[in-house]
Image (cartoon, rainbow, N blue to C red; front, top):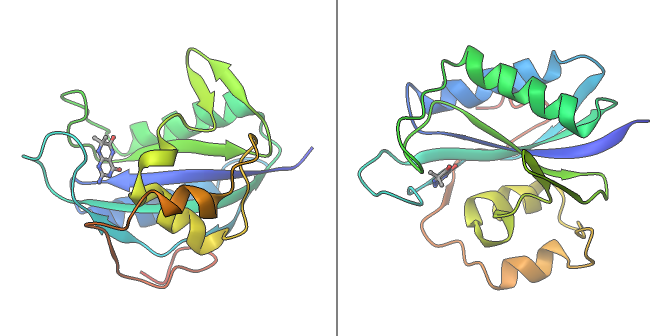
Amino acid sequence: MTETAYIALGSNLDNPQQQVLRAIIELEALPDTHVTAVSPWYSSPPMGPADQPDYINGVAKLETTLPPLPLLKALQGIESTHHRVKLEHWGPRTLDLDILLYGNQVIDLPELRIPHAEMATRNFVLFPLADIAPQLVLPDGISLAELLESCPPEGIVRHSQGGIRGTTG
Ligand code: ROI
C-alpha cells in the first residue's frame, strides 16, 4: 500500500545546501518511492552545542510502498553515502534524514519512533513541514497549526521557494 511519509533533512557540514539537494535526488531514486513535494530550505542556528555551523533544514514529502523499517534502512543508506560523520552527540553532521510521519501510524520501537519524538519542539522542522502540509493533523489529533502556536520561528530564515523536486535551490 502506498503511504505518505514526511522526511526531515538537515546538514551543517561540507556544503549543506548541496548535501540536502543531493539527498532529494537520492530519495527520488529509492525503490517504490516518489518525492511529491519539497519545502523551502531554511537556515537555522544549531540546537545543541553552539560551537558548530548553522544548519540547512527542510522537509520532503514521499509517496512510498516501503514499510517504515525498510524506509529507515534506506535513509540510513543515503546518510552513509554522504559520509555522515557524527563525532559527538548533538554535534555537526553532513546529513540527517529523519522520518517525521508515516501515514497516520504510531510506531514505538527502540530504533524508530514515529511521529518523530522531537518534532513538536523544533521550529526548523515544523515550519518547513507547514509550508508543504499546512492542514496536517498528527496521529494523536493535534494539528500542526496548534504545534506552531507554541513554537516561534526564532532564529530560522527561509531562503528558497521549495518545489516538487527540490531543484529550485
Ligand atoms: N540543529 C538545527 N538547527 N538543525 C538540525 O537539523 C539539527 N539536528 C540535530 C541537532 C544536533 C539536535 N541540532 C540541530 O541533530
